[in-house]
Length: 203
Image (cartoon, rainbow, N blue to C red; front, side, top):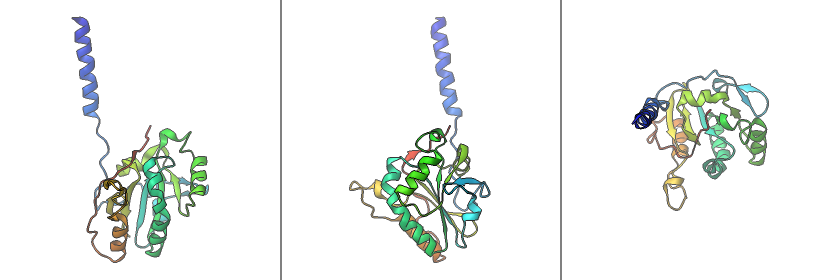
C-alpha cells in the first residue's frame, strides 16, 4: 500500500511539474524588439547588437543553426533574402541560440565553417544561454522575426509554405511578400504564419 501511495505521489509531482512549466510566449506583433542592445559574438570575431544591425527600414532576425534539416532545406533562401533586405535598406542577421550544442555542432568554429561552406554574406551570431531566443519566445530553427524601422514586430513565422505542401515546393512566399510590403510602407497582409523547424536546443 505504501508503495502504491509513493508511486501515486510521484506521478502527481511529475504532472504538476509539467503543468507548472510554461514556455515563453512568442513576441507579440507590434511589440518592440527586446534585448536589442545585447552584445552577441559574430563569426567575424566582433561583437554586435540588433540595434547596430538595424537599418533605416528595419531588421530581419532569423533564428538558425548548422545542422537542423529544416534549416539545411531553407538556407538556400538566405542569400536572396540578404540581397532583398539590402535593396530595401533593411538589416538581416542569423542568430544561433542552440546553447546545448555550443561545444559541438553549434560552436563558433562550426558556425564559421558552415557559413564559409554555404557562402553566408551576412552576420551570424551566437546567442549565449539563449537569452535573445527566450526574450523573443523563439521556438524553432528557423524562426523568422521581421521588425520595422522603429524595431516593432511586423511579421513572424516561416520563410514560405514549403513544408505545408506535399511537393515540398513553395507556393506562398510569406517573408518575401512581408519584406516587399514593409518596403512599400504597406500593412503586412499575412503577418503571422506557423513556424516550422527543429526546436531550439536550450540548456
